[in-house]
Image (cartoon, rainbow, N blue to C red; front, side, top):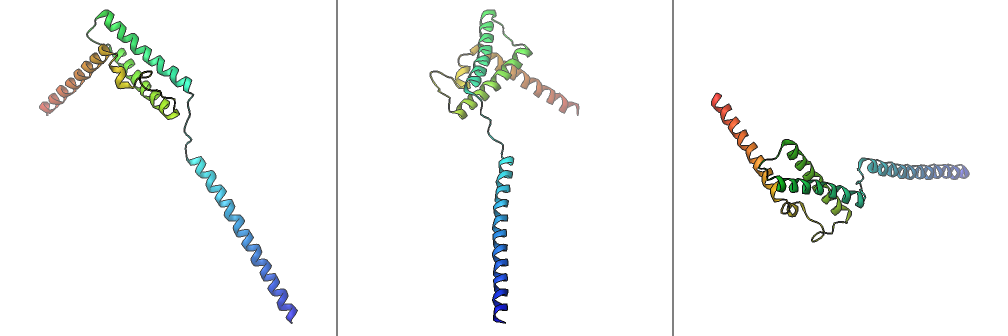
Length: 152
């Protein structure tokens, strides 16, 4: 009878040890799965090559400098819609390139590289004509709003 109880206790102990091992193994698997899901959910930051970003930045700066030279040469007083779109695209791309360079740790800063605001100081004709065009758009929008109010 004593041997029966000892065997029963041994079997129960073995079952308990096996269930504990199974439990801890399962927990490890759940941790691995959770880590893999977290890695999938988090978007990995896209690292752009510094040279490609600098090339993109130089390309859009050159577009604006050519536009500035053209305005200085022809002494025009207005920008076309295409030139305004070009200015807006170049502005967005330059700001994006600057932020990417800062993220990569490749931003040198003054006197070698200019922020967007500092670049505008080197584009006085383009900047003044863009501001003039924006003010005209706002004035037209206000005039249309007044006409709509008066019509009602």
